[in-house]
Image: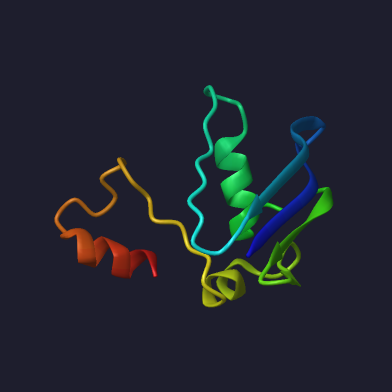
Length: 101
């Protein structure tokens, strides 16, 4: 369903992700765990198209998504739902999910 191969991401000259490989199959739940500054948020931003990798590929349902705009990635079904930051504290869970969609 989601395949990430040899992903390398830089912020200016600083390498944030080096050679990342991830594969998620349908109905599988995957967790990304790491210390602060380990690259978890960078990886999610890259999958969502908010930042671009210098090299490597991200495939969703067999199609490359690492070069398309964020809104198109969202239309294909990849979204992030912020948690723990109280972005919309007055909304109920459903409202927060709808905002994320």
